[in-house]
Image 1 (cartoon, rainbow, N blue to C red):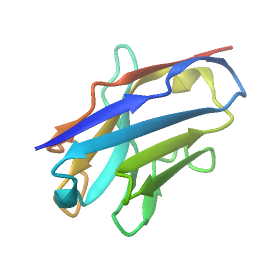
Image 2 (cartoon, rainbow, N blue to C red):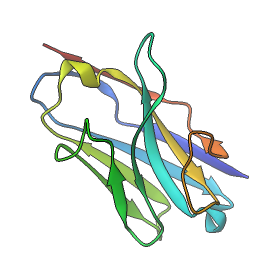
Image 3 (tube, rainbow, N blue to C red):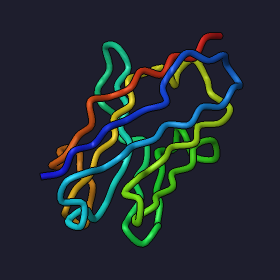
Length: 120
C-alpha cells in the first residue's frame, strides 16, 4: 500500500503563486506515475497534470504554462508549483499515484486533499 499526504494549500489572491507538496510513504517503489487532480464545488474532478517516474510531464490545457509538476524519486515527493493563479483555480487539490503506466481518473492511491482558494 501507498499513503499520500498533501500540504501547502491556502488562500491567495489572483496573480499570486502557491506550491503544493505531496509526500508518499509505504510501498513507494511500486509507484510509476504521479499526478494532481482538483475538484471545484459542483464540478467533476479534473486531472491537472501528471509526471512519470522518469520526469515526463503532461498538463491540462487550463493550467499549461502556469503550473509545473516536479518529482523527487529519492525523497518520494512531488510538488505542484502554481503561478498566476486565477479564481477559477479554486478547488480541493488531490495528489494521486498509480502503479500503472497511465494515471487514469481512478488511480489506486489518493491523498486526502488540500484546499486552494484564489480570491479576485
